[in-house]
Image (cartoon, rainbow, N blue to C red):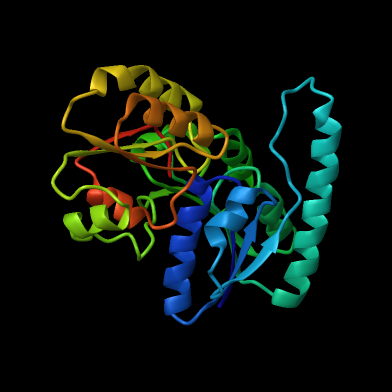
Length: 267
C-alpha cells in the first residue's frame, strides 16, 4: 500500500505523523510525508532518510477580513496542484491528514481522486483546519474521546496519539550526563512545544530569582525566538541549566526530568 501522511507545520502535527509512518514502513508499506516549508519541519526531519518527503507552500488561514486571505488562497491552490501531481505518480491508496494548515489540500486532492481519506486530531479541542477538513474524510481519529462532540457529523474513532518508537525511557543518570547536567540534582523540564511558548518562557524568567540557592537544575526548550533571552537570564541568575531552542532526542529530556512544566498541545 502507498500512503500519504500530511503532517507539517508544528511538532504537534509532525511527530505523530512520523510515528504513524514508522509503523506503516515497518509493515512493508510505502510512505510519503507532506510537510510545510517552515524551518521546524526541516529541522525535525533532518537525518531521516527512510521516508520520501515533499514540501507544500501552504500557510495558515488568516482572519476573515485580512488582506492575507489572497495569499492564502494562492498558496492553497498551489499546494492542491502539487498534491494532484504527486498523486499521479505515487498513486496512494490512503491519505492521512494530521491537522494544521498542511493537511487540508492533500486531503482535498485525495477526495477529488476518490482516494480513502482520514484525519487525526491529537488535541482535546480541534483546530480550524481539522474542523473544516473533517467534512471531506471517511473518519476522524481522535487522541481524546472528549473531542468527539466537535465532529457531530463525522464517524470518529478514539485511537490515542501516536508516539515515535525512539521515545523510550533511558537511564536517568545517563540522560542527565548527555545533557551536561549533574547526576544527583532534581531536574525540571520546561517546554512549550516545537516552536516554544513565550508565555511559559516569560513566566520562568520571572521565577528565576526565587530559584536561587535551591537544589535544582533546568532543561529549558525555549523555541528559536526566545533562546538568547532565556539563556541570558539563566546565566545572570546563576541557575544551572541546559537551554536549547529545540532538542531532537526528547527521550533524553523526558528521562532526565523529575518534573515537567509545559503548555497544552499534541507535541
